[in-house]
Length: 91
Image (cartoon, rainbow, N blue to C red; front, top):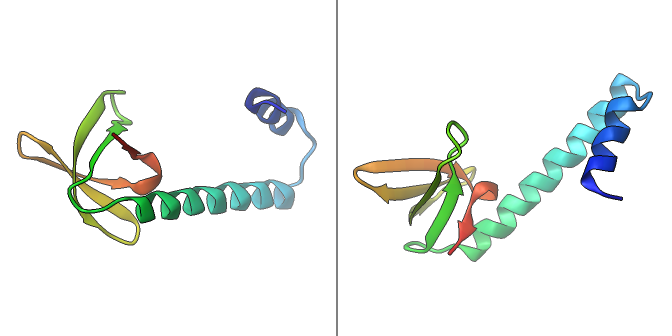
């Protein structure tokens, strides 16, 4: 099943509010697990990249700090970002 088929099935399906909440919780749990997996692979000083959600620009930088929810990334030019680990890609 492709992503577009799943998306279409959710939009056109006759799901109850409770069933949609269950789907949302499953996606949220999967995203948290992905972030935890990525955080375990990171270390201070690693070079990473992420996409700025406001303008779509791909930013690169080095990991300064790994927190419970976010990773602090220094992209240079005095710009420091706190990014969810699930949005990061190692370079």
